[in-house]
Image (cartoon, rainbow, N blue to C red):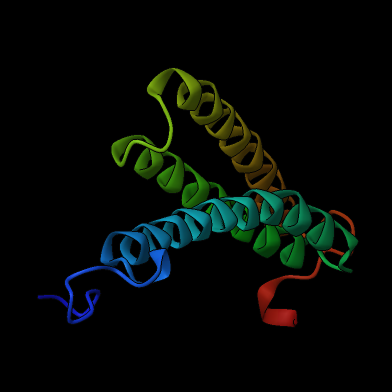
Length: 131
């Protein structure tokens, strides 16, 4: 007899079912992954906006780095969602391609800003050492 059963072997309530408890945990885990994916996706444009609003080029480069990290996190979570069966590959592929394109765009901006920092030009061209 399990903890779910009474002396008669019958379950008192569906909430007492181990399968229900485990499926609730699975649903919560799935929800957390979806929630984490939303946070990572939202973090990308937020980091870009915040970095651009800062005073110096170096800070913008740093926030672009945060955006790139969030893109990598979102990419990993998308791949994980396929592996565990939350998403089908056909649905994940366009998302992954878009992530890759945005990563290229972020990298291009980072490269241009880094070059400006080396030359001492650019908006509020503050280098890391002068911060």
